[in-house]
Image (cartoon, rainbow, N blue to C red; front, side, top):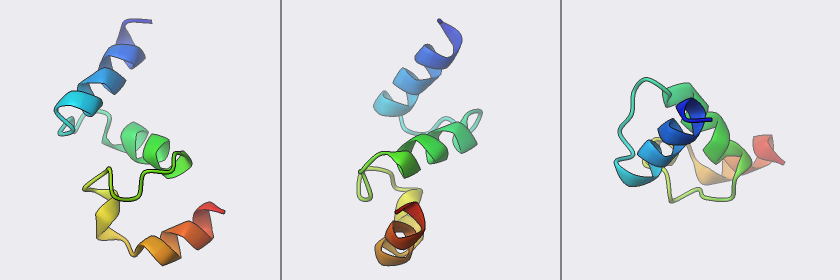
Amino acid sequence: MEGPERCIWHHMQLMSCVICYNLRAAMWRSSTHPDSDPQRRRWPPQQERVQGR
């Protein structure tokens, strides 16, 4: 469990891991952090919310 967990922790601290860019996007999409992820900020929060729900 050192691979995925370590990568996730890497995102939380640096938030600039391109290796698991998709993984992070999926994780944040499921989570409720629209303003926490700068990448997610690119899309409109309203539209993303409709798709997420």
